[in-house]
Length: 330
Image 1 (tube, one colour):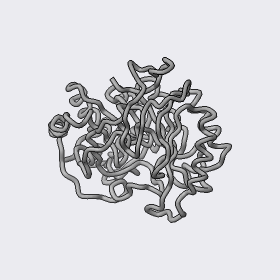
Image 2 (cartoon, one colour):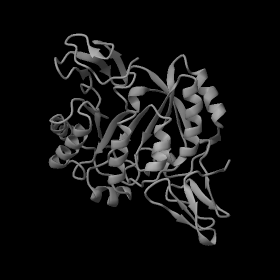
Image 3 (cartoon, one colour):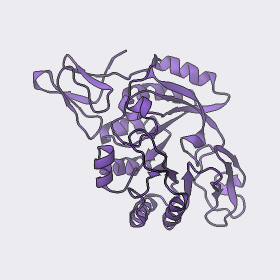
């Protein structure tokens, strides 16, 4: 089903300009944007992915990853197709950069499925592919989902313009935002984007919703210690308790570099901890990813892989020393 897009402007000669993300794609009739899901049909921009679901399931909230948002809980997760970045290491390239089979699911049907899973799920996560390219669908779904007391989560690359971001933030409870590197060279050469819009998304979102940040580390490309120091300092200035997930790269899609050495990730984790209280390592089995109180080092969340169990947290503070802990668990 095609749905007229919300964020665009009409130009001369039946052209349109999409205003959803910083690419600002200018499209003639029949052309599709970089994201692969927004198309000019007869001088009108349509969201081709509206209600088209390529994958769904119930995941641990830690898998998003969100470690400080209802730890130990699960969430109904859905994804469509398309992405407005072209990262050559994409872990979900089959739905982000190919055209997978989909099933159509109107917002009311998605709500029904979410409610059917309410006994085991806290809400709905829009994930797997890039969700913001389906902003119109998410906004409508989110209003329905939240009206029934359930949570809405976005797992996003953060490459979005401010007006649509504001519309999404009004309807979203938590976000995991990819900060793929802290320099434009990486973004331009590997992702076909640029970093500043992502920084603006993080800055704006963390004022209103729960935000965690993920960086997938690729040896020699975004593993410079000075850059990690600058990035973690930047995040720490926004919110020192903001969780940062440093994930290990494995070969995928167009990139065949060997997996990032675990020692590299551990070293950069220690660098990030100079500025941030909650730094975690992803894609490394057996690593200590417990959450500790920054003050007394008591275990707040005992975490094994994707299973988290709250230990010393009561009413948002550490049971042992009384320090306020940035974890949503109400």
